[in-house]
Image: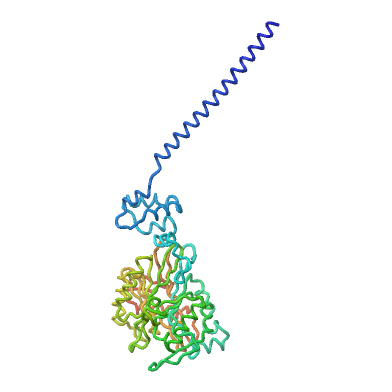
Length: 443
């Protein structure tokens, strides 16, 4: 019995010892784990970098705000690290914001300040993945007292004045702009002293939707053809149809106001003015009266471009100018076109001549002097659509779609007609070539 009890006692002692060893080992592991965690936290703190402070110290007249940078840091992790690196290596440019967040600096600032809420002068669009296509049309008439609308009605609608393939091309654009060369109204009297006066029923506004038009320009010499009442009806009709307009308004502030397109993380501003009339009849907007934005003296328009460029990635200046029915340019077109580029415009698009005029590249920027008639009268006349392709990396390409307006019907041309028109566009241009696929390149 004594031997047996001794063995049992030894077993109990061993069991207690092993139990204590297990507890001891467990406690050691817990302590090691806790120490490791504490040390790891300390190490993490050691490698954490305050990129906001680095950027604030490195920026040179960039005007960056610490609160804005903290907002970017929370919304786009790792973005500030790349921006700080670019600043430290002297590789910084505004393009880096889009590279690291897929939004430009100006778009980010607007998002930070919540600037896009309930704005009728801003449209946010999701464009195609790799490039944005923005199309420009020349002069458009939907006037009931002129050539096009009778054929629209008698031929069964939109395909009676535009070919199905050109309509398809227009609707493929991410954003399409047309020059609205008439008032929408059923009121008013024709302006005295004008040879041609146009007026469209307000019911015709739906045709813009059929064409795929997203915005119209109003700074021209026909928007006031039927006087004040018809002019104000035009503004009201377009607003009701949710079609934005630029270049005219109920006062000078509205007439000068840009329209902003936010697309694929870029901010594009459009501004519009006119200097088309040799005998000026269309009233200029004032602080209290409606009218158009004029640029006979280009100073105000140039200043507006400068102002808008301070808050936009790209500025497009659309100008109604030039001598009608000639491919030749006025000196003032060439002079002020360059002035507008120098003021900050990234391209200049012209209308009014009713015929095509050439293009010029100035400091790498495109000036398309006149787009001619797109769908305006019964003349047989060359026309086309200019498309600006804005790539994801911010680079630009320009294309021209050759077309013909004939018998109040506009359609795409091909074969020899296409080749001939592209050749003519090259000959009318100053330093540009129109390639076989319509691409416009600087010589």
